[in-house]
Length: 579
Image (tube, rainbow, N blue to C red; front, side, top):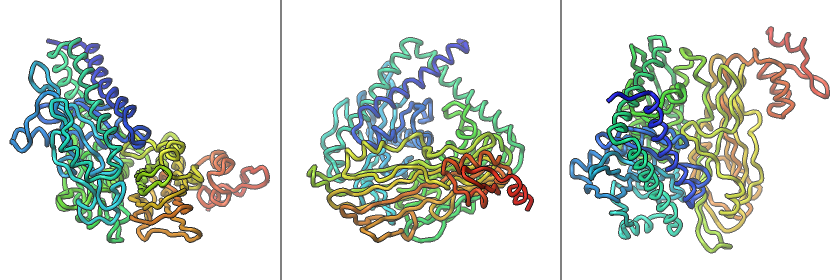
């Protein structure tokens, strides 16, 4: 049978639509704002043979592309080896073990076999960020954990749903080990329902076009994705390109961690060599292998977005040199900062390495932190405990064509910060500000975007605040002469006393009383190109919009402003730039 291009395109779009509907169903049915509003979730279709990616929802977190593929492959292998009970129709497995193809413990994965004619044809899988999975601190982001057990409940693959029914014994074990357990049933059923929607839609697609046609299309789409990625790799001149990126600290030892990367393009392959990166660390900034691989994949998706989501796109990419580094965490290394923070430093290293050979495609570094802020306590007005999880955006890096986006989502995902109104309704907090972090964009021909500036007050009850963020010591890298973006800044106000964490943006168990406030200013993106080549009119507009002060305009861009209303002093500017 020969596939015509129209049929192939329709089936490709159909597979994508199945995943998109799973994503939409998951978010609309979920109870937790982090899923329902922030969309911290992802859904996909995976091969029955090896767990390889067939399709993923366009609105899912890109960092889950590699991890869910790795996790599904591990599940398939464990079933074949008899380490996990074999499935029956209607079964849904739950797993969050980071060492079995995951991220951190809060990212909980469901996997359901999809049957055709009594045989497993593929797997449907999704991941959702649960607001809490137990552990030392509410929300799971233990900034000073030294073992994974301190971060929460770790689940191997087990059948949470058996032939369509929720197993009450397994569910009771889960709820007995997490906070606000009474609220989890909404997210659990939403996550399962999304897979059932995917099952229905995939059956409809296969009934319409036939199993053989769909099977052949999946194989052809994978082949073409590999061919397309190889073609894009040929845009990179053969050679070795190096870069470094830094983690502020691991939350326990207050010293930077180094990511050292050498990218080698030879023929139609790219090899990413992380040899020489820092050793495994004591604190939670270790990355498991699946997340490290996925971080490279998502970075290449940023650079070559035309390549479709498929396992074939990853075939020309080889990742080496992570053994015995903090980029290949082994049990019991803590990993809560794995997906949200370390992954973005890995992507930043890839961008920094490839911007020279691909200056028209690669941007300066983005903010590169998810801004993980968890607040847990008791709300006396509602007479119940709560766990609030806040993620936040930052500035994107400038690029060859334009300035970076301000307050964009994190590099790893398409998730968004929950609306302030939803957070104030759900939790005993009040936001005093929610604006751009002015002056945070790195200077350049095309400046970086600006981060976020927010301040939130605890209104009632007692609570504990915890942070696992990054870029508090080093700002996002500027490229090709551009300046670094501004760093992340966290200040906790207890009464009139300001407290800045020793690790700058990592801390746990900070006690808060009513009236205490948390002030966070996220990083701006790195600048692209020489700041002194930025058109003075563009600098003037930024100053008029109060993104920079006139003093910053002079110091960063060499543009001198005078008068009221402000105008560019052309002579003074030219003289300054000449020096």
